[in-house]
Image 1 (cartoon, rainbow, N blue to C red):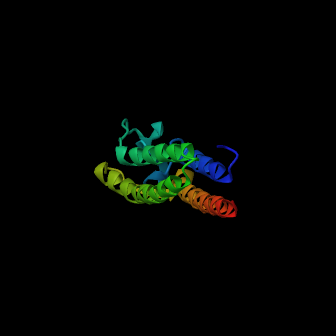
Image 2 (cartoon, rainbow, N blue to C red; image 1 turned 45 degrees about the vertical axis):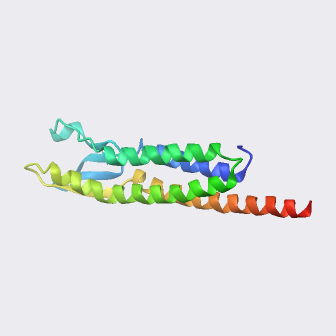
Image 3 (cartoon, rainbow, N blue to C red; image 1 turned 90 degrees about the vertical axis):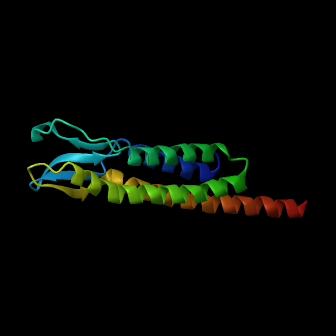
Length: 159
C-alpha cells in the first residue's frame, strides 16, 4: 500500500539499490591515473588503457539482486506487518553482506588481473554508498512498521 510511510522508505531503498547497478563502486587507477571502474558487474576499463577485457564478478551483482528482490517482496507484504518486520531484519543482514562484498571483492579482483602496469584501487564512487543509504531507509521503514503495529494493537484494545 503506497499510502503508508514505511512503503515510501522501502521504495527509496529500492531506488538506492537499483542505482548500484548503474553507478560505479570504485575507481581503478593505472599508474595513479583513473582508467576504469569497478561496478556490480566487475571491472570495466576505459578504452584508452589498451586493456581489451572486462572481468565479471558475479558475487556483488548477486548480492545486489537478492537485496532488490527481498525489498520488492517486503513492499508487497504490507498487510502482514510482523512478517514485514522479519523481512526488514533479513534486509539488514543482506545489506551488510553487500557492503562487505563491496569492500573486499574489488581488491581481490584487482589482484587477479595485475598487468605490467601498476593497477590500484582509487576512490570510492557513488554506487558504493547506496547500500548505506538503503540501510538507513530500511531502518526508518522498520521503525514506522513497529509504530503502525503498536497503533493497530492499541486500537484493538479500545474495541
